[in-house]
Image (spheres, rainbow, N blue to C red):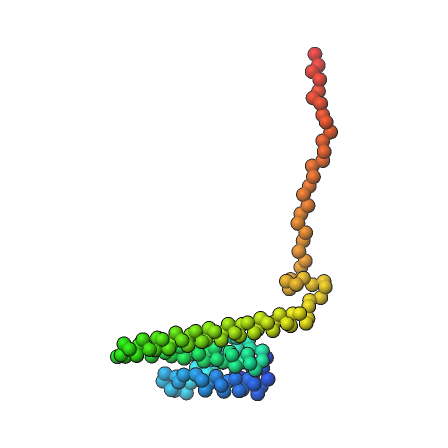
Amino acid sequence: MRITDSLPNLPPAVARYTFHVLVSALPLPVTGSPEDRAAREEAAIAAVAALYPADAFEGRLAARIVATDAHAMDCLRLAVEPGIDPQDVRRRYAQASSMMRQSQSALYALQRRQAAREKAEAALYPPPWNVPATGSTTFPCPPPMKRRRPSQPNRTPPPNLP
């Protein structure tokens, strides 16, 4: 699959550059085999595509999110290797925690940017007057009217007949 197919919202040159930045920022694969490297790159670009970047800056934010998350996971992997000094274990957990915070912060920045863009686009292109804003094609029905009981005339009880 071509990188430009994975990121259709980005111009081809920007998509290729985003892929280059992402791949160069990822931690090395565990085994270093070509299959592992290809799987790592494919998973990373799928993660970037899942964040739906719409422009070059959002593409860079998405690449940063995926790369920092990959480094956090790598730090966690290194922390549990056998024979590691306890001081190194603590340091690697601290690095993983820091990278997770960085990834989360970048994700929040991307989500805020996307929400602002979507709000601006919605203001530019409001829905037609006859289509509900919810995107539904059916119109809501008014609530049912309460039925009034017909007023009953004053009835007097029938007289007692002998």
